[in-house]
Each structure stands twice: as structure tokens, then as C-alpha cells.
Amino acid sequence: MRRNTGSIAANPVLIGAATVLVVVVAVFLAYNANNGLPFVPTYDVQAEVPNASGLIRGNEVRRGGARIGIISRIEPLRRDDGTAGALLTLKLDRKAGDLPVDSTLRIRPRSPLGLKYVEVTEGRSRETFAHGDRIPLERSAAKPVEIDEVFGMFDEATRKGQQGNLEGWGTALAGRGGELNETLRGLGPLTDKLEPAARALADPETEFDELFPAFEQAATEVEPVAREQGEMFGGLSATFAGLSAVSESIKATIAEGPRALGTATRELPAQASFVRESTELFRRLRPGTRALGDASEHLAPAFRAGEPAIRRAPALNRRLQGTFDALERFAADARVRPALGRLTATASLLQPTIAFATPAQTTCNYLALFFRNLGSALSESDKVGSFLRFGIVALPQLPGSEAGPAAVPANGPRGADVSRIDDSFLHSNPLPNTAAPGQERECEAGNEQYTPGRQVIGNQPGNQGTWSEPTGRWKAEGR
Image 1 (cartoon, rainbow, N blue to C red):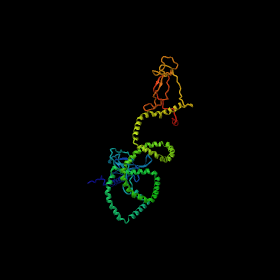
Image 2: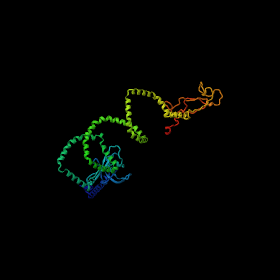
Image 3: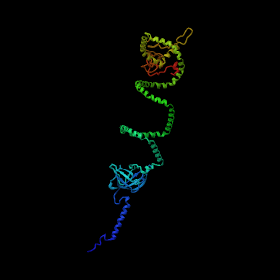
């Protein structure tokens, strides 16, 4: 029988070479395990994170607790706004699939010894990151609190404070077990009644979640005036210290408060109508009050001038007592009421006439001018008496002339050759405008312009203005 000299097992050299090759491959794979197994297709993306503290090259990338890749590279990163961060290169297994663009990354601890990994929370978007894309910083969740950071809070000052708290609470609660039991027993009704209140607070319509942000905003607004607030509380401390001296009076006031509230509850509804009417009264008085404020600069001198008269008013009042008694007897006379009725009717009848005639004086000053001119006309006199001044105006003798009786108003010469034709036209305005109601607002009497060569009867065209020669008070007021 012939020996099989071609078998590997029969050749020690080949067995040794195969063993060395297997060891080299195993060492190579073990050395490069942190960079992923060779010849495995990967899906590489970059991710911005705020802080890569504790991460090292080769840390795992997990999704749902299962490993889907490793961190192949960690680089420092400086953003456009000047802040620092880190840029991770993630080498992911192609079989795990592409990451949706709304996926989030979180750096989590793997053990208490500080080993970490990157946790991927896959999103639901149909759009995915392509090979080589960068995951923005917005998709990186905040860095979780580490156990060493928790322990780092308890520095020496904090530990001493905690010891003081424990000692104080222990001293306060020592020997009060019975009271605590009663307190806890009393919490039963509280929790029963707290449930509906808590349900109402949890209702979105109460907007309870806006309460603490509102407190935060209020605190933010108060912060710039913190010093003033401190001074205010210091002043309040002084105020309350002063009030402590009258604490008994305040206590008596508070004790009488329920009785006062009961009286107010009973009486205030009856006074509501008075309050409404008073409100309406003051609303109507508001225009008068504003007008009084505008007139105050004129009223002040009047009040100063009237002060002496007011001081003498009591004596005048005593002297007027008899007058008012007589006036009372007059008012009680049965004949007075009918007479007043007739006077009222007369005044009502005269009201349109007075309203029509009043502007002739108030606007045009015609009444004062009439009496002044009348007095001027009779001013010249001798030892016999006064006489009326007048002047003669000679007019031409023409048909219809104003020099004598005429059948028609004068309207210029009629076929006669006369030398004064300009005076042969009638100018008459028997009812001039005096700014009366229904008329144009003008003082026409005495202000008409003479129009030569034309007959003018009645009101002149245009507005002659409201100016009249001032007299007496009118001169003082510049009217």
C-alpha cells in the first residue's frame, strides 16, 4: 500500500504555517475591532454634539439597546457664533438602514466607571441622511447629568448645610411623634378634598402651566429694581414697628370689623341707587368742571374782590330779614299767582320779539348809539334851553325827486338837463339787517355804502360786517 504524501496533516511545516496565519488574522481583527470589522459595508455620517467629554474613539453607537456602529473619529469644532463643540464621525452598519432626518442623538453613560456610548432615537421622517451627511446640533439632546456631577454638588459648604438641616429637623421633630401622627391622620380629609382641586388645576382651561412662567417674568421685571424693593421692605419694617405701638387699637378695629361688614352688607345695596345717581351727577358736572378750570384765572380776582362783600354779608342778611318777610307775605297773596301767570304769558309772547331785537344791541350796539346820538343832537343849548341840531340837504327838483311829494321813487333824470344827476336816485333801506335770527349776520344800518348813479332800495348786496362804533363798555372791551 502506498502512503499519501500530499496531506497537510502529514506535513508539519504546512501545519505550522497555517497556525501562524490564523494567529496573525486573529490579532489583526482584534487590533482593528474598534474600527469595525473589515470587509463589512458601512454607512458613515457626521454628527455635531455640544460636548464629547468622556467619549473615545471606538465607543459604540446603539439604537434600542442594540449596537449599530462605532465612533470612528472625534474632532473639535468651532461654530460660526464662537461656541465650541465636537464633530463625531459615526461608522454605522449598512444593514441597520439609513437614519431619518428627524432622528436624535444622546450621549449616555454605559457604566458607572465613565464608559459612554451614543444612543440614536430613530425618527419617523421618510427623508433620510445620505452617506457623508452631517447631523446638525439641533438633533443632539442635552447632555445628561453624570453621577460624578451629582456627587460634585455635595461640596464642603453643602455638606455642612445638610448637617445643620438634619440636626435642626431632628431636634424639631424629636418627641413629637404623637403630633405627627395626628397631622398625618388629618391629611386624609385634605387629600379627599384636594383631588377635585388638583383636577381643576390640571384642567388645560385653567392654564396653570402659565403660572410659574408668569412668576418668572414678574421676577425678571422686578430684578432691575431689587435695590428699591429692598429699601421698600426696610421702610415697611419701620412702618410695622410703628404700628406695633397701636396694635391694641388695630386689634379692636379688626374685632369690630365683622359687625361693620354686616352693616355694610345690609345697607350698601340700599345706597346703590344713590351711588348711581351720584355717578350720573358727576358725569354731567364734568363739562362744567372743565369750564370752571378754564375760567379759574378770571374767577380768582372776582373771588378776591368779593371777599369784603362776603364779610359784610351777615349784616346785610340781618337787614334783609324784614325784606324777605315782606316778600314771603307778597308770595302768599292770592293775587300774586294770577299776576305771575299773566307775566309769564306776556314774556312768552315777547320772547320772539326780544330774541329778534336783542342782537341789535349785543352785536351791533345800536341802542347805545341811538341814545348817545340823541344826547349829542340836544347837546347845544342856551339860557332858554336845548335845541335840535340839523342840516339841510338841497335836492334837485325833478320828476320823482325826493325834494317833495312824488308818485314814484326817484330813479334819475327824465329828459331834463340837470347838473346834479347823481343826487336824483333814491337810496332807502327801511329794514336793514341787524344780525337778528333769520337774517344775515351783519350790522347793515349805518354801514351802507352810497352807490351813485343807481337807485338802491332795501338791503345792499354783500355782507357789511358786524362792526359798529364802540361806546362805553364796548370801548373798554375793545369791541
